[in-house]
Length: 125
Ligand SMILES: [Mg+2]
Image (cartoon, rainbow, N blue to C red; front, side):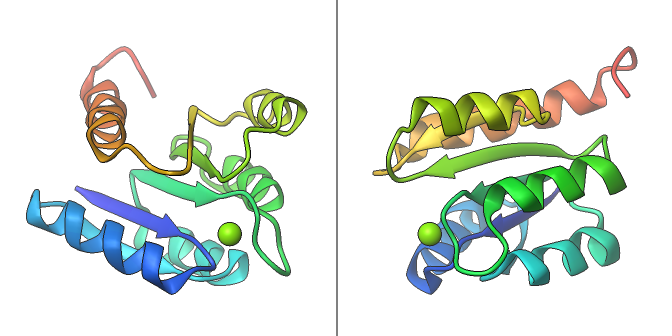
């Protein structure tokens, strides 16, 4: 199962990559929105963990582009500060969920697993 992790902080990418690789996910990381979109096209990940606050292209812009190009891709937004209006904007734009930093890995893994199980159900997408 392919998972794309997008965060401008390399340490967060590395940390999440090893966490999910230990659990047998195939993990790709990107440290910018532009790079993330390239991977979405090339690798077609099933789930994307997407940081909102990044220099250059923001997570919100990346979300919009993903939902346009690959609407079946599940996107979980990751945000340091829970800004109500930002989160609502993301959900309106098609985000499938959000998680706030500091990350609860257990919650995150459950959510990723849920999204993947949702994908294999015949009635969805
Ligand atoms: Mg960031």
